[in-house]
Image (cartoon, rainbow, N blue to C red):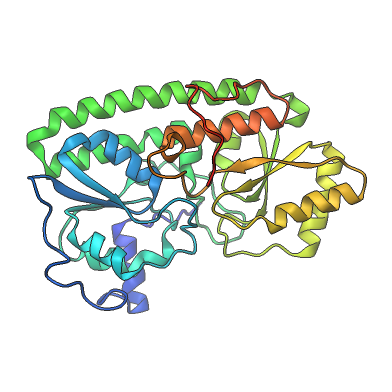
Length: 337
């Protein structure tokens, strides 16, 4: 079985073949743009919020961490702006997901890596675990990049971050290690909540239907069946026949609720609801889930733990399970935008 690694080497090879190594979007950043950070902190840039949250937890006060792709934004379709090029260029360390999640940022990531600074895929630790990575069923031989949906898989990204920061800033190695250990303990508690909440859903209703295939790792980790209207990448489009077949499946399985996503248009999910209701099945939208992006910065849902807590609590309660309304830590606000 062949898997797409999409490591730094893959970035360079792909970009060279496409002739994209060189200038980033909309020209070169100015000297002022790439000025180093003040107060002795070094700068870290991260592509998506889930990675940004890991780095902030591990780096603590020693780094200024900036995210590129914000809340409610789809990374599959995201095209970097000049501001993004500035953030990446002035950062001392860059983290990205890999596994082709940020495909449209390839040229910028390669250009930044060519400067010699660390540009690290946080999924590096699981790239060789072919029994863990889920292969797409579209014949592409690529892997599903949504590994953060399985907390156990995302835990493996934490040591990658800690080790990378230690190499860059060895004088604070003990602090990075301690922060990583503490954060992993929090993630283990989160995983226990995930397992308990999903297991509380009646087995016949343990089916998750969403806008696109972002939840397969969660499904495998909890024994929940998962169906997405679109493929793993939101660039794919669902046809009328796809929707009709999914409506038939929902009615046959007596599924009570389906879910929209904060970073994906909801028109297809609403079409499912209308189609099922037209045939007499009382289907409803069970809530809005975070898939490729977290909640607003400064909120509980704007953290990785809050994102997963919100998703699992929403899913369990909508499908007949037993989960507290305010979630694992009593901090859920119910806001998804």
